[in-house]
Image (cartoon, rainbow, N blue to C red; front, side, top):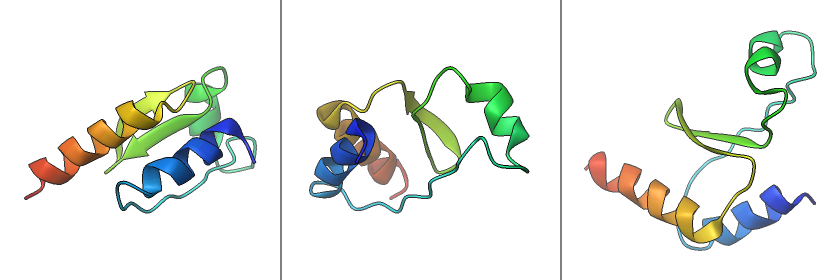
Length: 72
C-alpha cells in the first residue's frame, strides 16, 4: 500500500469520506495525466483540489472537516 493510501486510512478513522482512485495513465484520463503527471498523489474533495504530493493526516482531516462544516 502506498504512503498516501496508508495516510488516507488514518484520515478515514477521523472523518468519513468516499474515495475514487483514478489511474492517470489509462486511456481516457489524458486530462488528468496532462495536469498532474509530476504531482501525484492528488486529492480532490467535492470536485475541488484539496492537496498533492503527500497526504499529511492532520492537515487532510482539518481540510475535510472544514468542507464538511461548510456544507451544513
